[in-house]
Image 1 (tube, rainbow, N blue to C red):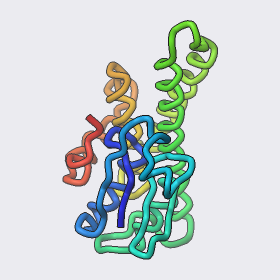
Image 2 (cartoon, one colour; image 1 turned 90 degrees about the vertical axis):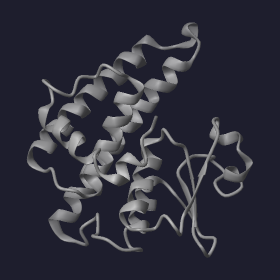
Image 3 (cartoon, one colour; image 1 turned 60 degrees about the vertical axis):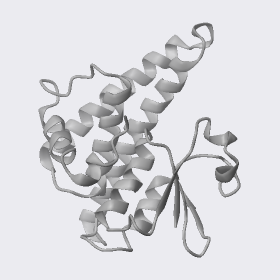
Length: 199
């Protein structure tokens, strides 16, 4: 299998963590894609949108979108399932994953806007995305206070929060969000997280 990925991407990081947690490192070749992703022909030949992560399995089946890739990876390899099979726990974990991805998505939008020339940037959108990011982090703090278990939902949240701290140093997760800070600290000591740091 081949996983097209970018080292900093919080979406690719989720997949890379699942690969390691399920003992799939020997089966999945991780292919680092140079930015801009859409200009990298090996990626666009399998994913016309040119986005990471993109997974190509042994049969040549192409899977895009980190949520779908992680759900597939969770069905193969070894180790405990990171997505409960059914019932309320299944939907709780999936909702947490969506929240983590939302933090990452808003963070990426903010990043892309601030990389534009100053005269092309939209102060309105920058402020809107900053406000959205703060609200999402606050919701993640509330969720983390009630659930610190190891599953895909919390993997997504920690991956996103780590990326926010990587891109926007100074987002203090200590005094304002102690439960989230504890969750990040606990997860980031795992080998799968240490091996996939965005920096």
